[in-house]
Length: 283
Image (cartoon, rainbow, N blue to C red; front, side, top):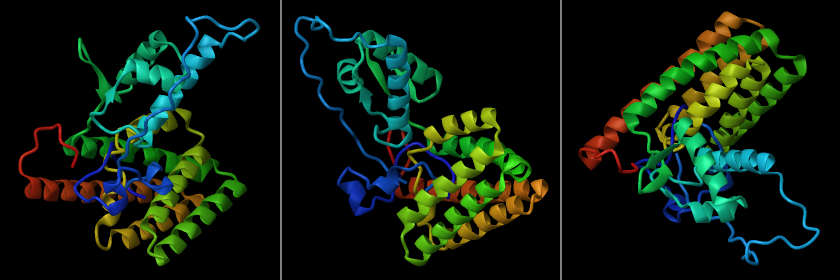
C-alpha cells in the first residue's frame, strides 16, 4: 500500500492521460491518480413547485448524505486538486438546494479539503509535496496505533479476512498488476483499522487520506518498491495474527516511514525535472 496523498504526480500512465482512471485507481491506497467527474444534470423543476403528493425530501438526511457523497468524490480523486466547485452544478449533482451546497462547502473547508475564496467561490484544495510528507508522518503515528489495537482486539474472523486480502495482494504483484495491488493495499489498511475498534483514529486517518489523493499511486511505481511494500505488509499482518501489539505497531510505523521517504524522494525528483513549483501545479 503506500502512504499519502491528494491527486497525480509527474508520472502519467495512458489511462490518466485520458482523464479517467480505472476503478482500482480510485481506491484510497497509497500510491497515484486524477480524474474529473461531472454529475448528472437535474431535470428542471416547474417554477420551484412540487407536484401534489410528492414527498418532501428530508433536509437533514439530504444535507448529510450530500456532504458524504461530495467528500467521497474528493477522497477518491474524482474531483481534482484546484478544480472549481460551482454551486449550481453541485446542487444538480447532489440533488440539494444551493443553500445546502454552501453549508456542505463550509464543512469541507473545515475538513481541509476545500478552499473558500470571497467573491471567487470554492475549489478543491491542493496539497503540496512537502505537506503531503507531513500528513504521512501524522498518519504513520495513527496507523501504528491502529495496528497495535488490532493485535489486541481483532477477532479470529477478522484476522482471517486480513490474511486473505494480503494473499490477494501477493497474487496481484505476481501478475504485475500494480493497480490491483494498490487496491488491495487500501483494503488491507481499512481492514486493520476496522479491527482496531479505535473510532477516533479511524476518523482522523480518513481525513488525512482524503488530502493525499494527489499522491495516491506514486510510490508504487518506484522500481523495487512493490516487493518491499509487500514484505512490510506481511510483517504487519504476522504481528497482528501473533497478538503482538509492540511488533504490530513497530511494523506499521516502519512501513509508513518507508512510504514517507519514498514519497519525499519522488517529490524531489519531480521538482528537479520540472523546475521550481508555484504551489498550484499538479505534478
